[in-house]
Image 1 (spheres, one colour):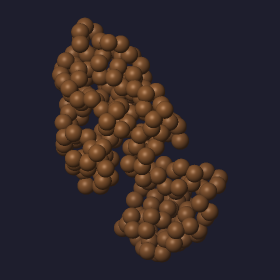
Image 2: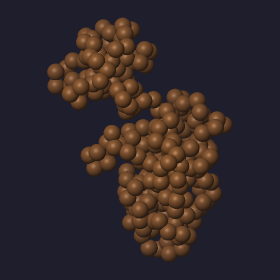
Image 3: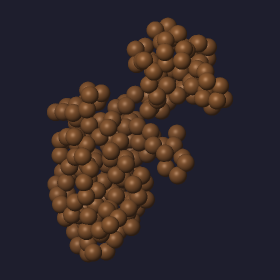
Image 4: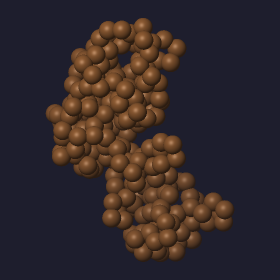
Length: 237
């Protein structure tokens, strides 16, 4: 499919925000699936991606906008760093990961006792709901995140399984396109270790899901296991 550029003002009026962007020049494009067409949604020149097969250097947006400007993964935002977009119950959110120095803790348990009792935290996508059910001293990982006050915000939580996988996909220390400050051994880099999610294993109350930030492997482990945690927060977009 060829792109026929129609330059639109950067304010994206009428809710017609971009859906794709050019990896070469950063031009932002809107795909109109019902009409089978594209138009240029930004004032960048777009010449390198105009009249080329869409898909060669055009990628779907995984970024949100702030004051009409493209917000790149890893950009400082809301007390931490922009980690990606997510949808929970039909509403879109920007996910923010806390700074490493204040929002990360290694070698911490998910739950200390009464592990035969389910926590009711089996949501794969909603870490806010999961964390809200574990705000007590029996759940050290969730309590650590919930107790943070970072960047003027106090709504930090332990990410769900899906949210934690988003952090690895976009910010994993060994990933190809990870922003520089999150690459291995950089200031904000995740350790190449296991991190707890807030999602317990639905088939066994003794276990919860974790993600390995070296290769992105997911696994269920005993809630007594010592792992890392990295807090997140979110807001509607």
